[in-house]
Amino acid sequence: MKHTSLTQAFWDYNYSEREIEAKLNMGTREEKVWVVRRILENLPYEAIWKYITLSQLKEHFKDLRLRPQLKNIWEYTLALWDKYDKEKSAH
Image (cartoon, rainbow, N blue to C red; front, side, top):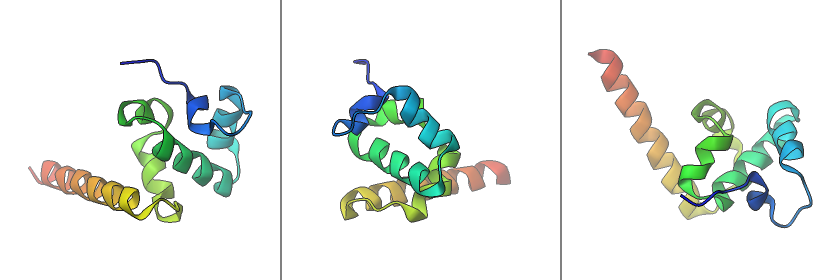
């Protein structure tokens, strides 16, 4: 896999990776939502998980303003993971 930098998700801003991580980890709720959205929209799937956790995605998902197709894909993916987790814990 080609190395992906967090700054690639913010190609139109002049933020360092450290500044973006600070917004994600210690920023306001709006900043966190914005960072998660930019990561989902601009990074390859494999790179997303280097920067955000599933719990962060779930926490902020309802507030994300994604393109409808992308929102649908992530809603479906989260629903599958939830179903899998419920089935796994039932056994």
